[in-house]
Length: 104
Image 1 (cartoon, rainbow, N blue to C red):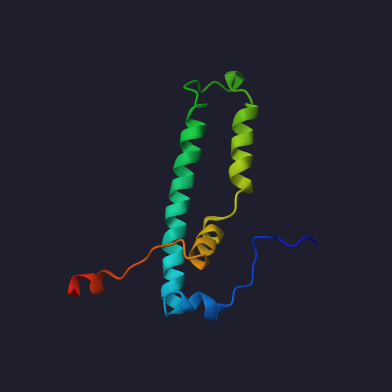
Image 2: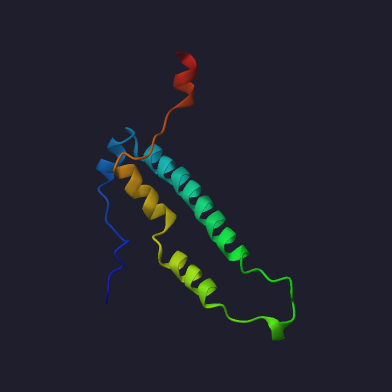
């Protein structure tokens, strides 16, 4: 049985180290995952909209190989949560605490 390479066991202490609190770290990762997901969805919709047909007749709808390849490409991409965790652990995600900024 092949193991999905996107499934990685994380050291929760290392995840918590990044923000000082495990729950805050997970929150930051989840917010970044939402951003990535939104961007990916917008890109995919823009690419697929090029193939949109105004014809609703089933006889005139045809299979478009390019459209299928684009869809398969996005299906094979890592999940947004995996991408967000990688970015977070590599210190590529900037996060701040708004309440601390307003006090200064």
